[in-house]
Length: 337
Image (cartoon, rainbow, N blue to C red; front, side, top):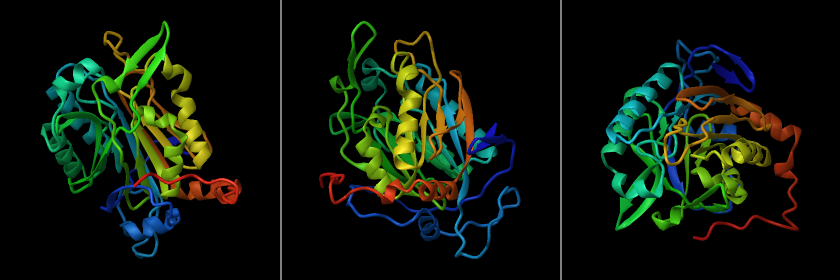
């Protein structure tokens, strides 16, 4: 099923070209409009399978693209997990996805007892497999996350690859998942993992994309910084559980989308009732009006939505809160350099 801002149908593919990415620290400067971003990233070539009309004139940017979220079933076998991910990436590309995203900890079970055993360096076997998959399928690939080992520390790290297969950025989970809900769940990532300190955005012909991981979604300031950095889409590979998932998973995506008037998507592993940590599932895509336009169940699946950056611009014109902020009274402080 494919959805365009709430209207679902089957359809063809949209096309895209390689654009630049950057690993950033927020510099407190408002960025270009979404159309200007697409224009700077490059023109959108005509494709015989495209469902949208695009001009060969380099001054006409792309605004419509298909997003694919892979809700992967994760096992204890790393090689099988990576092989399955590569296969599903190809499936998403065949269905026209130009940006494809995997879930948090897609190559291993999620849990503090697993991170050290499954950790690898970047580049490593998993990241090389993702690079090849991005290149073979000509997609922007947001590689969920894996346990990364570097300089004696472990990180929960997301890698992003271009359609040419190059590593264009990596993001280390900034806010570690340390919670205690008495009688329901206690978890402390910080027992094993170290926190990252940098934001990550990457540019495409369609919009700028910001990346976070799971618990990061709870921190509104992070999404606001990405908004001020000019992002039109935020992607959060995440593994909420059977306590926080039904209560907050969709709510947080809607809140971040509505607050910042942009697209927000969260990508979960499929649910495994036999696992020590049971993921909620329900990977979701939310539009700038706060509406769910695509949502998975709890089993392995790929969901799609055709996102139109022009709709984002329409919402911002209709409810212009981005231009009505009282910066004479308050302001969002910048990230520490």
